[in-house]
Amino acid sequence: GNKYGLKGCTVRTVTADEARECLKDKTVVMVGDSVMRFQYVSLASFLKNGVWPDEYEDLPKGFTGRAAKAAKGKRPRALLQALKPWPNWYKMATEHFAGTEWCDCYRPLSGWISSTMQRQLAENRYFYQESHNISLSLLTSYGSWKMHGHFPPPCYKGGQATGENPFVVRKGKGGDPKERCKGKSGLETMTRDSVAKARHQTTQDEWDAYWNTGLDWQGDMAWAVRHIVPRLKPDLLFMNWGIWGNYFKEIISEKYAEAVFSAAEEELCQKGVKCMWKKTTYAKHGPGDDAVRPPDESNMIELVKRYKWEVFDAATPTRETYSYTDAYHFTSHVYNELNKLLLNQLCPREGQRVTKKK
Image 1: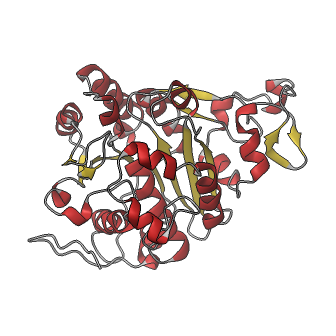
Image 2 (image 1 turned 90 degrees about the horizontal axis):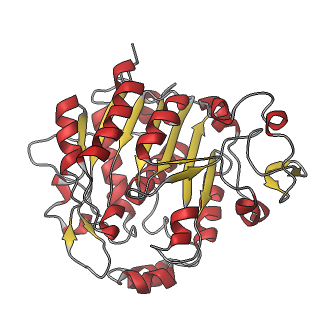
């Protein structure tokens, strides 16, 4: 199998029981794009099942085995056709988590860089492990696009619930928002406990009704870090710019980078939250480009140095190791091994837990 062997470093094996004990009573919030998504999926699966997910398990339904292997190296236009069962993948993922996750997720099948995708793409995942009171959340950000999402019930937007599922609504049956929210604003309901209570397995009816509901919140990464993340009460903020911006040939401006870090510093880091920046895995990923390359996140790294954030370096160990390039997310071992390194960083000694907030 493929395993990291870092020169000059001793990497210990953190068992699932040790990881659960290390993260007991903790809240981890991840913010990033698809390379952060699959690190989240890998870690949540390990915490839930006690084993790392198998190779190719992170593929959409009906796209496994030889078909998956054959897809490695395909250019994006060809892969778009292969990835059309996104609704199936989201539903399959919630089946995998068996009611331990709320997937506030929707991906239109309109092309990767379409205006419809930009308006509608949403993926916020909230995993909760009741046995150890562990909350692991992912807020997905794609380059400079706005992030989208919903509040948990009873403020879930869009209308009157059909039957007992508050996530399946009838279009145009919204009623009074204050009545739905029991006098609270929607943002007030974005709490650690509320998103944990919202965990459930996504149904077909729910997926079909998703865009009948409209959106409850939207904003760029800086807005989400300032207004959404603090309400989840994280012990650890784990952020990453990712590879998506490469699709738009985006260079992160100093102004945008400063807005993101200022929001994190003012609302989280200066209040005792551990803030960690993840450098991006070298990726065989890009429009019409099979080259192995990293994104340009230099402005972010300058701020990491200024504010003295801890760094999780997923770039350097993968720079010269072809088997660790992220070939369109079809290499689960990349994320499994990165999470093994992350657990070494968070739980450096036997029995030691993540430092609590002051």
